[in-house]
Image (cartoon, rainbow, N blue to C red; front, side, top):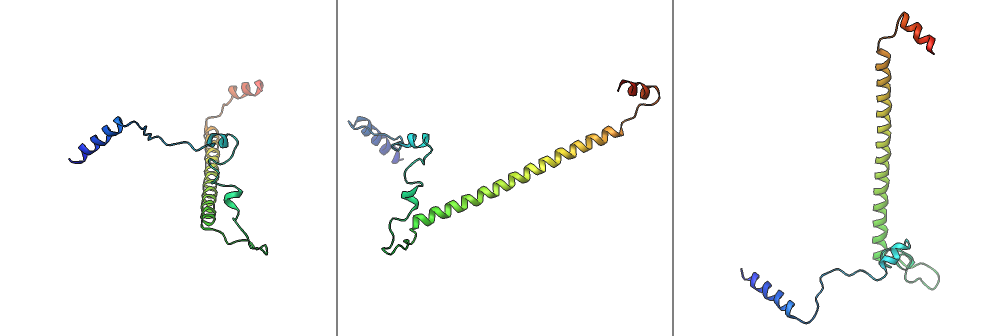
Amino acid sequence: MAAAPVRTLCCSVLRLSSRQFSTTCGVQAGEKWRKEHGLARSGTEYGPLTDLPDWSYADGRPAPPMKGQLRRKQEREVLTRRIVMLNSELDRGIEMWSEKQQEAERVKEHKKSLLLKPKGKLLMEKKSKS
């Protein structure tokens, strides 16, 4: 019960304070522009500054990958595997749906073939129309 009066006191102090206290999340500078131009939300998500090494040896050998680069590479591999798995599931689903449609069409044609056929006069009239 002691927490409620402290909270009330804290809120009332903030209301009486001359400073403005914002609890909304700030939008990163340029995020909208980058999205409109097909770039990443922030400059640190992907791109040459993020993906390429910061340095290399004087003889031209590449630097060993940093932890962040290895982490991003692993995340991309996991995402790629998931995309491939979901794509194969989608392909299997489309194939199964197509097979069901073909089976339904075969059943429909089979039922149609089992119907009674016109005989005698009706058969002659049907032939003369076509």
